Image (cartoon, rainbow, N blue to C red; front, top):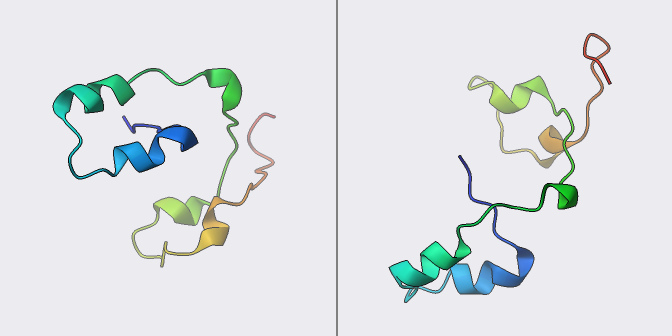
Length: 67
């Protein structure tokens, strides 16, 4: 499961002196109303494809999937 860090906590998260207690304080559920889910390119999960391309996370509509 990935950890989603709030924008306000980014500088705090990368502090090399961050204690275990501080790390634990950042691990909390994210407010789902602040997230948007959408489908992306199938190539994003293809190990034979150069996945270091920003367009891979652009929204893609697949007609075979429900809206």
